Image (cartoon, rainbow, N blue to C red):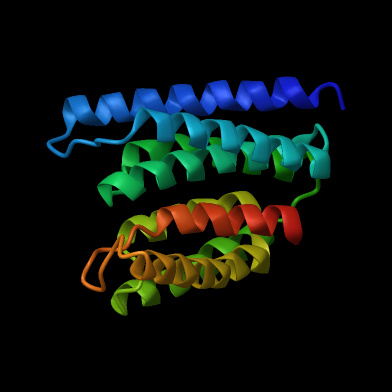
Length: 206
């Protein structure tokens, strides 16, 4: 368990650095400016480092821990930026899509993974989220995030994650409405809730 503290510290440093790099890049190159609170950025990074430490306790050091840690880094960074900008940036998704494909190849080659298992999750997620887009529940950026999440998790579990994100998102939206932090006409940032629901999935079911 002595390795737990270095893991949490490393994740804090990685997440905080990635948030700084991505936000600075967006503010420099996009017309939309992300004006977040640096203290909140720090708190999110520290909390995320602790949560990844809990993933280590469940999975120990190994292939799944590395894969799910990379997935959570993607979801936390995308969720944080979406919370402030209401935008999912494709350049971030492409980086983690490439990483997910590499994990998939390694899994299929060395861990007796089944391609059909991952295709079920990816195709199922695309179908369900596309329906959600037509119903104006999700935006296409959310489809992007959930499809990449399915690439890492696969199977019916990733499809279950979509329904959990519905529930978590509904609860989060209700809390914001009750606290008067949002109104019914506001565009909803779903990526933070996808990050929360996926983490709950990883620590509770897989």
